[in-house]
Image (cartoon, rainbow, N blue to C red; front, top):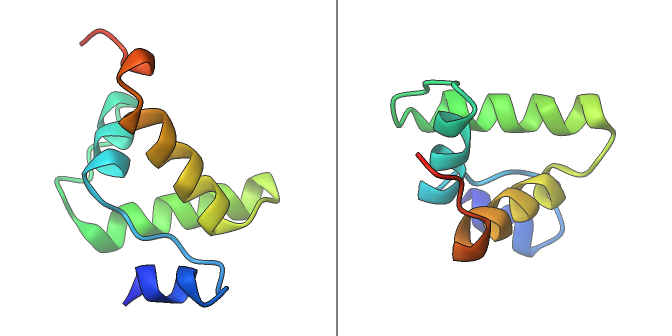
Length: 72
């Protein structure tokens, strides 16, 4: 449902494995809790003054690009 909101132009995030990986690398353990991850991403976007879906996409793109993977 959240991805559909993004597709119709509503500023929202839709956490998936890429966003969970990003949060975990940042030391923010959300334990695969969708609501917690979404609240963190949405709040970060709001504080940064960017659209939630743009932050979601930026994180997704970064995490999905294997050249940008941080060494664990």
